[in-house]
Length: 149
Ligand code: HEC
Image (tube, rainbow, N blue to C red):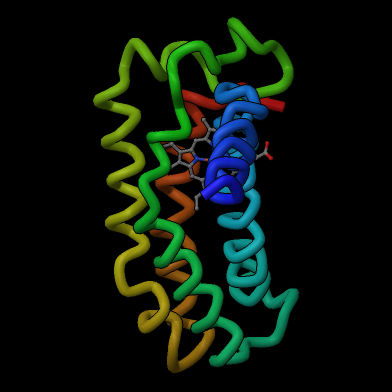
């Protein structure tokens, strides 16, 4: 019992160690890093910088699809925009005054990611529409809600 209590205290103190705002920024930036790590090779195949390989393309497409299922908006708590955090984030404060639109843009991305793992099979020409469809949704959200670097 004593050990259990000690373990519980340890666990709960770990949970409060991190700053929730900082953690949210880290989590969403990590999410986007993973997203672009999978988009990059697919767009490389489209551009002919990388050879098309069905297994590799399928893996990246499936990863993007899996990421799209993640509830990302939870990592956009109030108080985590450039207004409060400066250069530590690229998230414009207008995200929070247009939250429904921001979430809609994430939903557009989710829709574009549907079936990506399957759609990229069968040749390079099948990768192009997937990359274009997804790329449009990245750009549409970044244009509105992300600070240009
Ligand atoms: C719903 C809006 C939205 C969509 C859709 C979206 N992004 Fe972003 N993205 C953002 C915002 C906001 C940030 C800034 C996050 C921050 O710095 O806190 C960002 C940041 C990034 C970053 C920088 C991460 C870092 O480490 O600073 C990359 C890379 C990125 N996005 C890639 C993509 C790609 C690729 C797609 C499409 C497949 C995409 N994003 C779709 C809103 C979006």
